[in-house]
Length: 231
Image 1 (cartoon, rainbow, N blue to C red):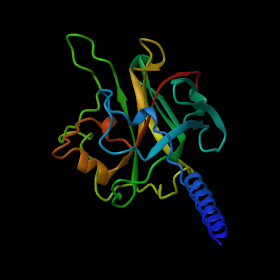
Image 2: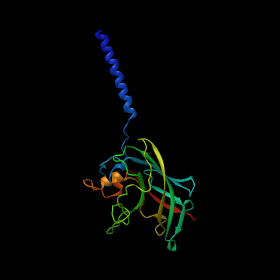
Image 3: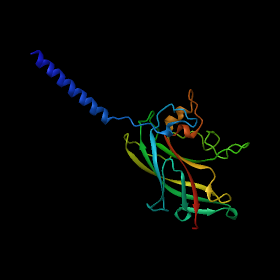
Image 4: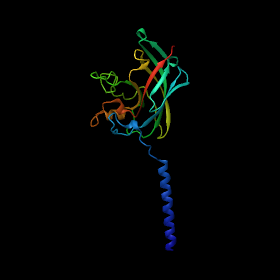
C-alpha cells in the first residue's frame, strides 16, 4: 500500500513539473535589447516595450520597398526619384525631401504604464558637437521647442496594442534636409523612436528627471541617409 501511494505521489509530481515546464516555455521573457539603455549606458528605469527590427523606404505613394535599414547598419543611400517631394534650396547647396517609411515594430515587454490615446512615432535629427560649439541638433527636452514631452492624448494616434512577441508595421513620413555642400547627406543622423506618453511623463518627472528623447523612447533606431539622382 505504501509503495502504491509513493508511486502515485511521484507520478503526480512528474505531471506537475512537466506542466510547469510547458508553462514557462509559453511565457518566456524576451531578452533585453541594447536600445533599452540610456544614452549614458545605464539601464532605463522601466523596460523598453518595443524593438524596431527594420525600416523600409517606399517609392513615392506605392508599396514598393526601395531601401531597407537594419539595426547596426545605419547607412542608407536614397534616390530623389523615390521621394514624395524633393526640392533644391538656394544654388542647390541643399535639398529638402519627404520620404515614406514603413517601421517594423516588435513588442518585447508589456507596458509599464498604459499610454493615453496611443503611441507616438517620432523622428528628429542629431549631430555631434564641434568644439567649442554645441551640437546643431540635439534631443534634450526644451519646453519652448518642439522637443518638449509628448502630448496626452497622443496625436496622431498609433495603435501598438499587441501581445509580446508580435510584430506590426507603421507607416510615417520623414522630412529631411540634405547638405550638398559636404556631400548629398544629412548632417548628423536621423533617429526614429516610439513614445509612450504616460511612461514619458513619469520619466521626466521626479525622481527620474530624464531630459533626453532617446532615454524615454520605448524603441529607437538611428540611421544616416544620403541622396542621389534627379527628379
